[in-house]
Image 1 (cartoon, rainbow, N blue to C red):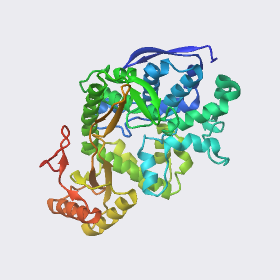
Image 2: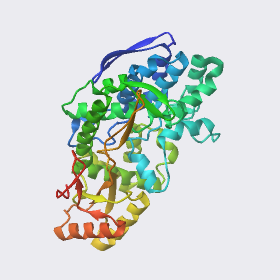
Image 3: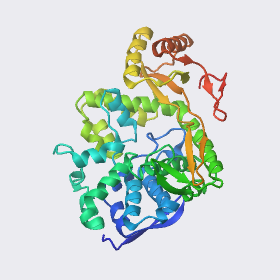
Image 4: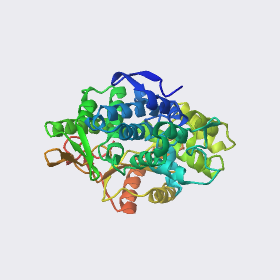
Length: 425
């Protein structure tokens, strides 16, 4: 494929669009092609089958398209426009297999894998054991090709421009807010795309309308068109609430996340998985877990694939200034296992249903939209094939409230953000 080629894409959310010349070449490099086989939703959902096969590849193409549709992109120079578009296309390139689940498994073990910083780290690294760098082998023996692409596109200025791309992916530099901020093309596409595949009813033009309203990036924030943008962003936040209300509170999927996170942790502890294996796609990752020598890993993954989830407590909303760390959750699992006299594995999710956004407009206004949340969702699973008793449920909630010094059984209302007496799921 040459830089003169263009590719036609047919997107289920945005319809037909073309990617031309320089960006078409980038699409077909291993860092982007790997994402065809990395899921967007983190788990192959049992209750929302429409999102089970949704790939990060489809998502990054959508984020790229939104970046091209912004009013900001239309007024940029060729080089700046390519930096913005490339950052949108590459923003998920270092995501771990199964989305964020493997990254969370490493976080439970005290090993942080931040995919938004990974490209910059690899460009600066000199460790030959770390695959996936700018010119190191990444996908089935192929080099990533990023440096060669940058040289062809930006000529002698390639190093500075590639650095601008990595900086934007990490949320910094002149385009950082467009790629990694409280409201960016990643978030716009992610929420809207999942809502579409989930089957929710919403205005499919909403993310495009908000993208059109992005006029500039100044002093670390995006500047939006003044007229009507607050209503558009408020509608998108309501859609986000609806999406995450479904994603967060699905008991079967919560159990599946527990299972796959702990399978990944055990794979690391048993020597099957290494931090450098972040570069795997989902096919290779699950092949490793299923065909490896660890019996406990294989058993958990087989159970999930066969639709035999772990038994799960009620999912309880807790309120505190910050959600507990993964270290604290792991320690709580050990304490609860002793208390209930069986293996217990806890998992918490920070409330993603709402967020506060400061919207800067061309008229100089700053409009606050949405609210911060101090809630987080906690559940506990066990491999034992028996349900938690009422008494065990009570001990779980009481123990969690004491251990985390958090207030249990107050659930944020999905529409108003107020608390209600609907305590658990």
